[in-house]
Image (cartoon, rainbow, N blue to C red; front, top):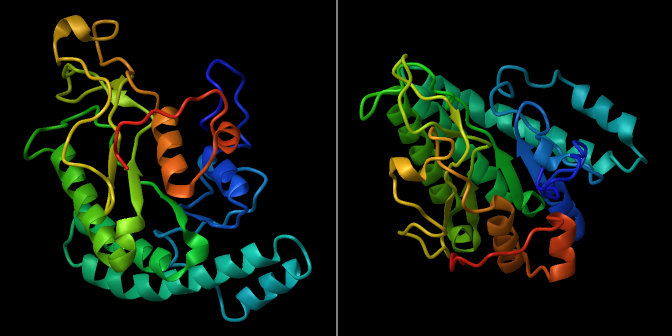
Length: 273
């Protein structure tokens, strides 16, 4: 949500929607089954499922009827954009899903979806801010190491990110991607050869203009004495402060507009962009 720390949460106001609002929207799209909380707010934002779009395309004439329902309303442009994007998703996923279904695992599946997201965002200026979710990280059982479920998930994630960068092409130098999770994992393995929910996690920041190849921000040695409550890693860097700086650099936001996006958060410069 990105709201003020310690205050009551407003689940109808997400930080990405507030970003679109201060930028004068529209400009966002969620590639999710349901609109993510981060995009909920006063500015209408379309969401398009990459999982069901190909299996459930709109019946012939249905898109026109839906558009007619919203004609003359503030949601007309969002409805038309969502219908067109769903059509594109359905057409492209039909081909890509046929290929990925031939014995391919989760890595191949996300790679195809990420490549499609790159194609859509590269060709649609209105979709300059996007959100996509990747599941399968709640590894309570048989997490494994180099050959385990975590390694498989990480391979799928990295292949997808590489495919997205490839599809963005000449737009990649001006693109910033942030990979984040709402929770971390415990430092110790549980009795089921997995890990449980924890506090501290990791942010990945990548893009054509990102000064990467390093670990940034406050850090602690991976030692037992540094564990939070003797079980997991503490939260050392506020994700709102990291994103606030990235937004300021990417969109030229001043302090007043940053305050509207992340109330009470202070932008922290780790030299990423």
